[in-house]
Image (cartoon, rainbow, N blue to C red):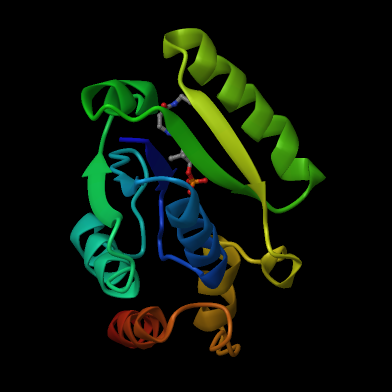
Length: 160
Ligand code: PNS
């Protein structure tokens, strides 16, 4: 089975993430969307909230499952028989760091990285900017899946 991982913080998932997940799912037998548990970085959403939103937005994709992990991504790949890391590239500035990580990961275990060009419609999107815009009342309706939009509004209302 050809299996790939789409790793990330997903705090929260955006339409740009979903585009990459859907396209990876068309290329691989199975895609694992893996949420990094980063104990040093407090997110807006808990890991369980992120997993729940991701499960809901990917429920129409039968070969996609959602999981979380901590530690090195290459170790997660080895433990789960994952041969490739699939990620989106928004811009040239993404490329430098993504290439460095791809090379490091390949050096560590031989895992391949597939860097997919983002849909230009989403090239300005990031979870951080979406949160910032939403925090100050900007309209992010077209930037995130509807369930994420609902949860984002509720979370920000809770915090205000
Ligand atoms: O959504 P993000 O925060 O841009 O995702 C970055 C992520 C989680 C994919 C990256 O930081 C990562 O793979 N972290 C896991 C730790 C690791 O393996 N570090 C070595 C990278 S070469």
